[in-house]
Amino acid sequence: MRMVDIIERKRNGAELTKEELHTFIEGYTKGEIPDYQASAFLMATYFNGMTAKEQATFALEMLHSGDEVDLSLILGIKVDKHSTGGVGDKTSIPLAPMIAALDILIPMISGRGLGHTGGTLDKLEAIPGFKVELSEAEFIQQVKDINLAIISATGNIAPADKKLYALRDVTATVDSIPLIAGSIMSKKIASGTDALVLDVKTGSGAFMKTQEKAKAMVEIGKNVGMRCMAVISDMNQPLGNTIGNTLEIEESIEILKGNGPKDITDLVLTLGSQMVVLAGKAETLEQAREMLIEVLVNGKALEKFGAMIEAQGGDRNIIDDHSLMPQAKYQISIKAPKAGYISKMTADELGVASMLLGGGRQSKEDTINYAVGLRLHKKVGERVEKDEELVTVYSDQKDIEQVEKLILYNIEIGEKTNAVPLIHEIIK
Image (tube, rainbow, N blue to C red; front, side):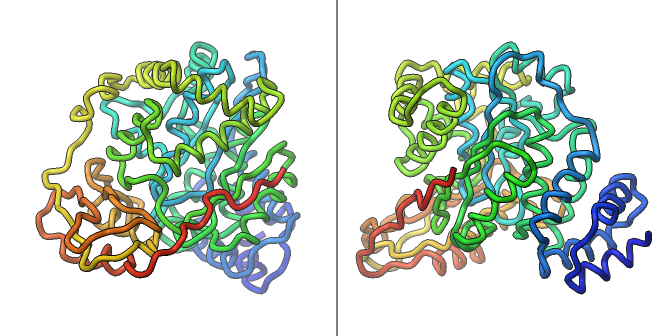
């Protein structure tokens, strides 16, 4: 079976067979299929999509490209959460220790930044010494010891995804539902998760631009045999007030201290409540939410975050001393050109602004600058005065003219408008 024939069939809109998808995944994982043919396959899939059957088969072939983690010796329901990607989305970082503080198991295999969005692993690596690559034995032991671990797909866990993940980033094929689903579900099933909450983003800063496409994620989850539900949340403006790796760790700590921005705190509590109920620790979402608030108030969630940092080789002193993380040379203020209300923020373009500073990857070989990024002082619906600080840019270079133009072009000031609700829909 030739790869060129598989590419041609997908280019022509045919439904690929299990054997054809297996040939592609196995051949690319082993290095027998070159990047240029894999890129052609990704682009053909981007334009023609996959049927429900293909999507399920593709995800399972990604899973079977490597080993599955056996967490059966750890008693209890293993619950996980995954976001389909968004600007300023650091949700997993405060959420995981909050759930673990309630004695729920969180074996989380996360990803790196793609395009204009940041990755959970990249953010955690802003913490000096933090290791995202653990062996399977270390991963299992850490979950046993402190209820959680956040790691990359290391070793032989979904190796096909690891290769395709980087290739999608540089071939403009990130925002394809079958490819997103295959990436997510291969890792989540491989990690031994029993139940999964999907945070499906919709809007300008998300990879899936419409709510209809977002709903398809739940069907894909069902088709690969995972018990899961989804929260469809808004990404028409950045989540929280920061974009950038060190900055988002700082904001995550503020959430765990109970001082985080309202939008991301609400989303964390909404997602977390679903996870607590799925784990059988609460009968109602209201009860679950109260339990999560309690671990914020009593400090147990923050303590659990510190325990995870220490367990994975990081310096937990960053919790109280943010200067231990990489810091930008310059903090440059972008001022509002006129008075009015913030009527629109184009989230993906603000993500691109952070990427241009060095906070993301434009090619898979790029090194991330953890220190750079943006701090937003206003969100949609809020009043701003002329020359009031709109955004602080954290940069290692003084000349940010291109970035400043991009920011000002994508933050509209006009008449008062109501912010779009953060939670669009919950699909069970």
